[in-house]
Each structure stands twice: as structure tokens, then as C-alpha cells.
Image 1: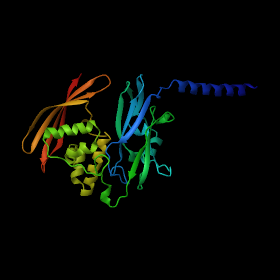
Image 2: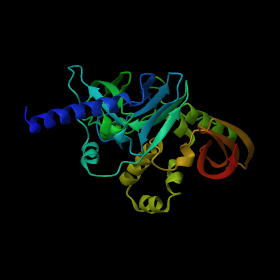
Image 3: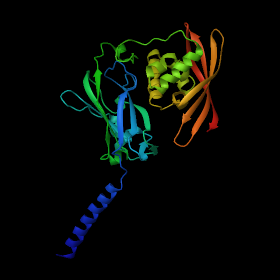
Image 4: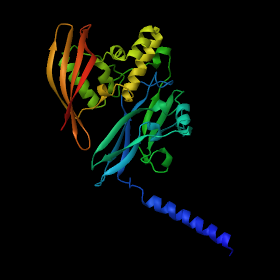
Length: 324
């Protein structure tokens, strides 16, 4: 056996040894699980995600006795994949945006999440950011979560499967998001309740990830106008452009891409003070946010006003009160 051949064999064996060592030293994800459910059960239509989103609630849970650590990319397209199949087992294509991001040379920023036994970490994503849903049909939807990011996609957690019923769009207006109650097509309507109850129900809806109820008492147009650049664009836009901005703003809120304070999920809250006149008011609430090693305390002051007999949240102020 010549020296060159012997060197090649040793190199190959060394490579396999390195791979084996790397795999045996990877974190153990056998006690981790990922589950999905619809975040806002709606009537879904084909088309663009900003017009007719399919929002899904994703939960990673530690089912084991040891601390579970995993990576979560700031751009979650590097942490997960949605898969949707037709009844004939044909898989839907990925969006151009997803493909472009993953094939572009860029730095992927992430944070490490640590979960103790029984703890969960949840977030929401729009399925249409990942998949092209262009035809009405019944699809079977699941998710692959990559705890070591997409670059190590051979390490994955597979979710449960959902049935996604996408209906034909009879008119252009049918592609609008329509909140519905539970599994029915009953449209939820706001009630004539006091400002403190409006705020209370809104916070509880956020805690339970019920987006249709969360938006029920929100003046989205006024929240858009809090942002100077969006306000200018909104005021100068056509009716169609404004309508699109309202839908996009809701989608961005649900995906936590902006206005993080208003969509933050408190562990608990306490209404501190409520004052209001016949048309204007404010509700002060102390909210506690739990993190792995501490709790953060904040005072939210929700500004409300009455329109057609219904109180709506149109602005808010947040003051940090320290940690506990």
C-alpha cells in the first residue's frame, strides 16, 4: 500500500470520526416537542399573505427533566419550515422570499432559548410567508422546527398536522381577513362594555392568543398614525392603499414585527385606575412579564374613546417600573 493511498484512508476515517464526535455532542432534543394550532381561526382564501394571512401559533415544549436549550433565529425563516400537502400528497412550493433569504449570503442572528421542565415557548408565523397558497383546496399542514437553525436542518422537530381549508374567492373583497368564532363562521362583534372591561378583555385575549378578539376593540387606524412615516403614507394613500395598510399592520402586529409593547404577553396584570368622560378615557394597568431569571414590571396607560357606542383603544403609553 503506497503512502498516498494510506493517507487518503486515514483522512476519510478521520472525517467520519469527526462527524460521529460532532453528532454525539449535539444537544439531546428527544424530550422536546413542537406543536401548531391556528392563532385566529378564520375563513381562508388563496392569495398574498398580507391580504389573507394564515396565522399559526407555534409552541416548543420541554417534556424532559433537564434544561432544554435551542437556537431561535431573529428571522424565523432560518428556524422552521411549513409543509402543506394536497389530498394527492403533492407538496406546495415555497415562496420566492423564503428561497431568496436562504440562498443569499448573510449573517443569521439568533438567540438561545432555555426551557426548564414543562416550560413552553410560543410565537406566531404567517404560513403564507413560507408557502405559495394559490388555489382553493384542502391541505394538510405541518411544521419542521430546526433547533440548531436551518444550516443544520437534518436536526429537526416535527409538529402535529392541521387541516387547512382554503376556499375559493368569489370576489375581490372575499380575500379580506374575517375573524370568526371557534369552528363556526359566526362573526364576532364588539359589545357596549366599560373602558376597563375593554382593556381587560383585550389583554386576556392576547394572553390566550385569540387575535380576532384582541383586535375587536382596537382602533388600528389610530395605531398606524402613531408612526410618523406610516401616518404620512396612510393619509396620502388611496382608499385601497389604506385598506391594504390596515391589513398589513395587523399582520405585522401578529408576527411581532412592530409595536412590540402593545402585543407583549404579560404573565399577569392588575387594573390600577380608570377615568373617563362620555367620549374619552384612560385605563392604567400594571403588567408583569416573566423571563427565565427575572420578572419585569410595567405600567401601561391605554387611551380609549367611544365610537358609535363602543369603546376602542386608540393609543397607549408604557412606563418601565423595574424588575423583580
